[in-house]
Image 1 (tube, rainbow, N blue to C red):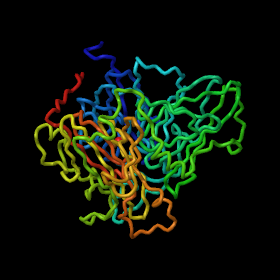
Image 2 (spheres, rainbow, N blue to C red; image 1 turned 30 degrees about the vertical axis):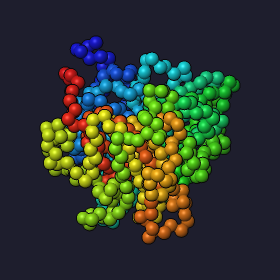
Image 3 (tube, helix red, strand yellow; image 1 turned 90 degrees about the vertical axis):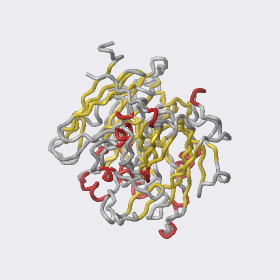
Image 4 (cartoon, helix red, strand yellow; image 1 turned 180 degrees about the vertical axis):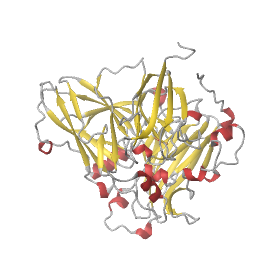
Length: 516
Ligand code: C2O
Ligand code: CU
């Protein structure tokens, strides 16, 4: 115990442009950024310094961390803190909670394309009986080679908007051809992190089936014999793999983009080898590739084959038949905005991009703490009362291009259970498929998208209002604060696909952790 701190882990993050690039941002010149690692309930301190020579502002969000009692450390510009201007530093201090595999990333503009890193919280009472791979977690990311990020951002807000385009590259740990060297005859824990800005990827390793043991940081009933796994933006998995007993071998690891027709088959191939002496002369293209999900399997797996919680204490109350205290529906959609700004992503007819808040001088959270609701963007705020059991139905609708798009929705400050899902328009009585008996608690989930609309070769743009499916999430409002709930696709969130959960503000104590 130093100065009243329990097991303090302190990091300095300097956000700056890489070399003489004018669009690639990095933390401490590393890609991915430095890893944060701590034991459960330790204290983590991160000093985030904005060293950009442009006028761009920065915030860092700690994705998967609950921030209980510390909503002001959540890293959302104008919402939980004022964004960090050039030359300034913001200090985050928060508890390492919950245990598991998490990530951090910039929450400003499209900066998260390169500004991200891993957070691992270990529970000393639950050690894995498996070796961690030496290179640490595998972070998947997408990249737009030679494309200026600031121009992409500007284009998305134009009328009509200019789509950011499909990524040119996929990376594993920032590399095109990531090399992983393991020992034979061992069981390894592999942490897989979806740090993509746009792409949903599927990942597999030839001849190395995976056993999924952790989902978004939560323990699940182990799911063995998985040959390929879907990882959407914001999702994390931990899997066990067993290496073969012979002392040499070279295998392909492949991550491929799915859910987007234009990018289908874009992929990135890494190499798993046993022992440093395993020959690498093997031409990459001659390696046998893993068999990844085809589109039908992908669809079935994404919505039907989900994971079950391992711990009794994390079971969904009060069961599938039991009702929540309150329920609300979020209709997501892509429409022309009434104010003529162009096409935006909307939630219940309201769009919410950060530019709406750019004239604020204090964060919305600080305002609320002082009893001032005047600046709240009321059309995108949903109020949750103390300890309520809340059901949120996310109703997906077809976008203007006629496609039922996939949206990985992410919730700050909470984990939720996947209560049920169905096709078409949500109806509390019909069309409900409960999600297994004990759905896992998670914080990032692909909402239901129908295969019909997605794969229809004759997309009919005029039926874009057609509903394509819904997913019902259940959560407990046990964390006072102001929390983002949004699509984790960078461009969708940037174009307004965000809402705010205003939760139990009366019990917001804002206990600031003691700081030097
Ligand atoms: Cu990882 Cu609000 O996002
Ligand atoms: Cu989306």
